Image 1: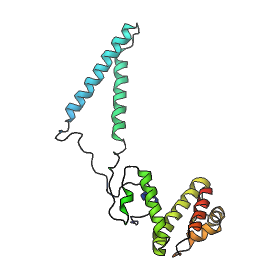
Image 2: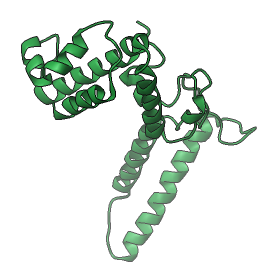
Image 3: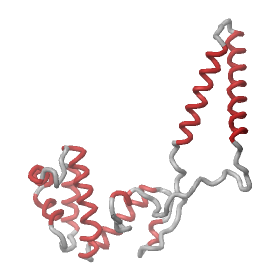
Image 4: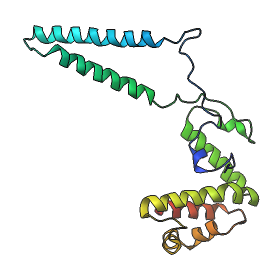
Length: 199
């Protein structure tokens, strides 16, 4: 199911709507190393580390079996290679969104700031547009309310409506359950946000 590109929690912290691209080579024109070269490099690295470690330990009068030192460095190198495989993708480059009105305010590299500014703009524009409020803001607030209820009380609006209604309070519950609502006034929006924070 596709969501509106302007709303939803998954979009709240996403900096870019573009799919992640494959990792680029570190240098232009750099050729990827062959598997044999990588294995040879890792074996040399373990051999050098083992030689230095054994020499330092023996100079201090400590004798460790060489296979134990080799095994330790091999395990360490395998862990480092495994961690590098699951490293997070690089941060997206700063870019301007051109799909929204007032897009100039979304430029920058700070993902949280960009998300906050996007939501400020969406809330501001939803105050004058009932369709925008019911299509973007209301579902996002409902998703946020369900998530807070689930994390803090182990319920959602669908799993235990009576308890959820009690925790949310009547004004917030009515806003979340009434489709096609009129756009809220600033004080109503503030009251709903306060109620969400108290859950």
